[in-house]
Image 1 (cartoon, rainbow, N blue to C red):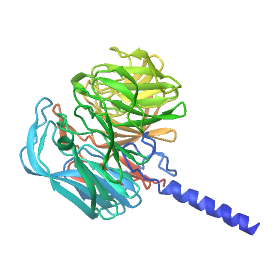
Image 2: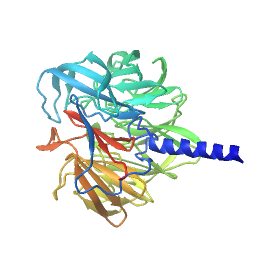
Image 3: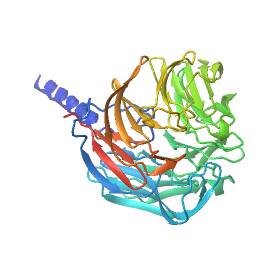
Image 4: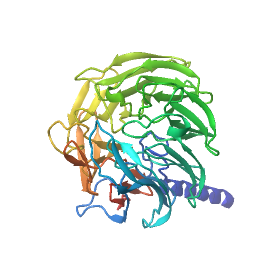
Length: 440
């Protein structure tokens, strides 16, 4: 009996430690679903505000951090020549260095950094876009001009690298390479571009190409997305011409349906809910699909129209209990939309721009936690709210950092946060910040 209680105590200890030390090893978290599963988290913010554990200087960048154990990984850009100008239709030339930085999660001190010279020729050129992907002791980083680098997560030593523009005879899209790399099994999946190579699977340990697939007018910006449906894995690739389901092992195309956003801006990851799949983008372009249980087909249930659906761009929506919660790109409002028919239930600017008027590309990054949501607004505010089919209910708000970038004349911070170690980790173009979210 004593041995039994020892085993039970050990199991409880392991479970408790696992709940405490949850990682955020990639964009949208451990399961890439925008859900934070740690326990003992604040249910409202104290009147005096949240505790800032540390602030550390950082270069410019849109790339969010990844957190594994006691380490934070993030990309930035150190500008040496040129002037940043945010013209959505023109590329700007800059000179400088991209950097992968590893910080101590406890105090923000730099443990190691890996830097390389890289000129930019991009619109909205303020640094890298992609959150690092950390898996099996390796860090996979994709820079804005297509530098794909695998580093040792412990010491930053380079294991392998590829230059996607050179290796695949392609050009960076006007807003840069922005599709966060995906690790699944032995594969590293990337959106690349070029003839027959919009999607490429690499050996994650060597960088050798395993397969390539698909052609399009542009590679777009949508991250490769892995789903399991009908007991089979499907790799979803949405480029500016169509959404496609591929065999993850071979790259064989199972099905392909046209879905063409404005300005070639396929960005947000398609979201699976039971047999239904929702994808949306700028220009009232979106669709709800019903997937065939065989995994080899899909049919359109409804397509986007004005005054229905929500058409997200900067932030991937979340589906809960048959309702889509997302931020509409053209209007800039957060919305609740009925999944089955696209009917709009409510909308508000409160968690995005904090105003009351239409604001193109208004942004709030969404992460679900238990029965609420943590929202990181473009204003630099962290918001705790409840979202329901009936209303947006804001519980608490705390200003974390200043919006240091610009969009259409307003100041913004467009970087997806990470949630780990019962903390928030988020950055702007000057600093990265760690905020304590442990329950009091």
